Amino acid sequence: QDVGAQAIYTVTSLNPGQTYYFAVKAYDPNRKIESPYSNQVSVTLPIVDARPAPPKDVRVY
Image 1 (cartoon, rainbow, N blue to C red):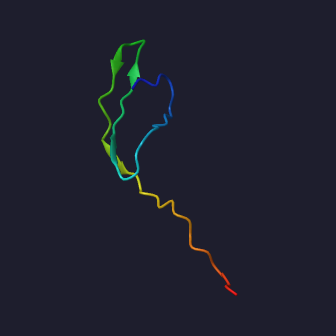
Image 2 (cartoon, one colour):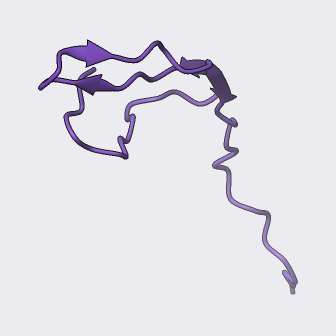
Image 3 (cartoon, rainbow, N blue to C red):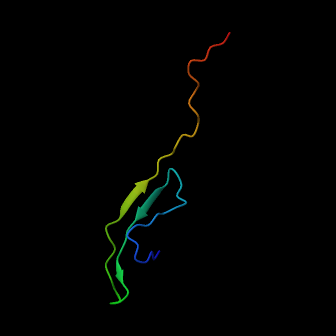
């Protein structure tokens, strides 16, 4: 995806537990040249346990 002159791009709609692979390249539209792709990096998103913690210090009378 072309992000223009941005140095930072946020990838959204990723799923927990999935592995994603990324590589980037630079492009100079004035000179119409581009770099080769960078080395590929990968990240696996953790699966977050959304269950609440059990109650503490509960007293029953």
